Image (cartoon, rainbow, N blue to C red):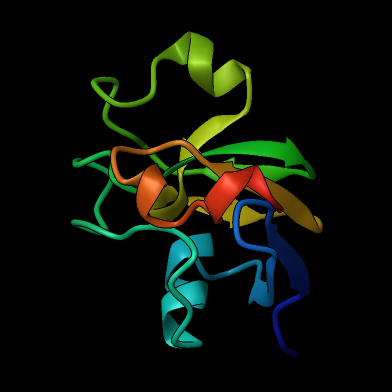
Length: 108
């Protein structure tokens, strides 16, 4: 039996890829050679891969409260290296390096 795969859409860049529910959103993206979400420590401590889930369901592992407060987590913010899709997910990059992935002139 394989893991269930979900469609991940990065609204900032328009990238779409699939991610098994057993792999973090960031790791699945990196394995495909994509660059839509900035990447740092991959362990939940640096905050570089912070995203806001606009639609869909995720499960998260422990994240540094320095980068994602409990209030932010309830509002859909997470570190991509610590979140696993439970459904198709659309997200926005909001971490420290978000400008590096934004399309010019705000086009999505």
